[in-house]
Length: 224
Image (tube, rainbow, N blue to C red; front, top):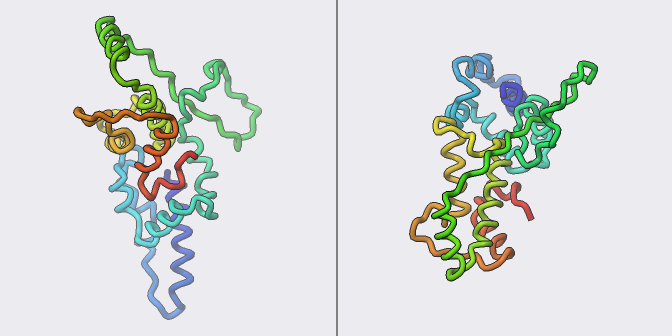
């Protein structure tokens, strides 16, 4: 995280140097010293608001530009960061079957990044009465097959967006907990609205519905 934030500081400093002339008063070293500003911040548990408030206006502007343009040079540098790669948790469904058996090779170059995968969630035990009741409803009520497809797509999106797997491993006190809850509520509101009667009719209907629920800043993350 510190490596990623330092990149923003360096890029922002370059922009400021281009703006301030030799006779202009530049910001002090203390204002630009990212380590000093983040010295008392627990980067592993800090909320997004805490990290955001620690950035200078120039750094915030640089971050938003990179976020809105993933193809930009800065965004590509950040995405290629070894520290970011090391902290990324790949989805549990991509986990190789022999992942646990792999041993680190002492001769492997230090530049090679070892991918981390989430643990496969345990299967839930559904009580027989619930299964029997749902079977009866399924035989007489509308099919919820495509609603389930929407839930699975939303689950995959949230997993990759937050780089956390499985999503159920997020604790209530984690900064990502509220964000995950907000995203599920926005993408598949019929899960949280008790009186919802939404029935998605087809796979194309699922895609259309989900697409309409992405926020503008999520456009680059949409999956066609």
